[in-house]
Length: 592
Image (cartoon, rainbow, N blue to C red):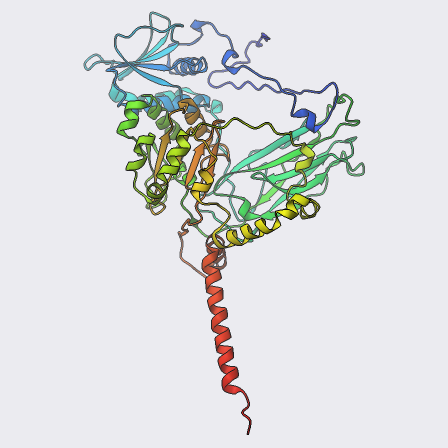
């Protein structure tokens, strides 16, 4: 159904406004975490929003940005009227990027039209008109009201960069979205310092988290430990079996009971939770607090609960050990330093892909370019391509696996096989060695798992690329064809790809942990990047080797290429045994 809610006068402000919709839902019967997975509310975002009159947008830079954002929410493209050529993506991108920066989300779709094109239905809210030479206003641009009521940005094609600065200044600073906080390694940092006021959980199945960034030259792969000093409390009267799982990048590092009546309702002493630093990664990381609260009794309705189930205080601290300045090639590192001028498009992509796709990508990477410069020697380049270009790409990965990559792009997804739902409680003991011993199916698979363990010790956990691609179907794929040149990346768009999904997923990589990583990453039908990491990734040290960093450097190399260290140890053992045998033979007592 549709619901109209009045907005109090004065609540809306100039610039960006955020609307938060929060659903608190309760089953009438069968209360608990498992029941929560079968209860949801759908919000039709493309039919929802704030209703304003067409005259609500002023004919100025802020009004133009608001009109473009509203038009994008309606699913309409921003039309650029000029020569009709799409080769001007580099010049138009600064203006399109400002829409994303000012209002969040993804850059609007763009269509290039000539001067005399047919109007749209419904009428456009905003559009761009490039002025012919000699007709430009004194400043190179001006905002006008079109005959259909649209806000028209009339601009000299040479004035886009200057106009982008004007648009950036038009948005109030308090209305812009803040990026993820940077976590400095080597010291304890509170959640408050990272900008989190604390986390509260309501409901029966709860997942709340905090995201932060680590430097791209931070790398620890061995046995070093990080620590989360947790300061939390939980509500009274929670049923027996209520649990809180603490996760780092999806891996559970601590399981805490929430049903102890003696400690309920009070702030507990700070709890140190140590975990492997190798669970963290350069770039975006996330710490999750996942609560499972059963029904009491499970076949009755949930009782309303005003207080939060748990609360993580802003005094919670996180410590990440310092590391030597090291890196390994990967899509995440290259895309993080990619700039608009590093984008290009192949000839076949020009003929088959939407004209505005390259412009949207340019706006994505321009809109998120920060103050961090690319490391020395790294000149990120991304080429937009189609499957027809796979045979032309140079590099070991492309030479050996182009057929497998092409198969993944053209494979039709198999229909999902219906399986019995896994209860939330069955996932709590995942990885528990005692529960594994009690399952006969896992005991029968022990020889195969032992063989896999020996193989992974020799070459790492990742399978070969053909094996990894065998059951995957990709809308698009990102890959580094040559790890010796990690700054060269190709985005190959498949025949069934949805350009909007590609742009949205790449825009989200600046804020979430699920972005492209490793050497090959496929975009699934659900719009999620699934990544393959080569077991042969080379490491690069960006500082002199000293006694202070030698242990961490050696640990990273031993973890990445264990086979080299196994061969060294075997060689040393054989040499020692040979020397011992030689000494025993030479020094043995001779009989008279």
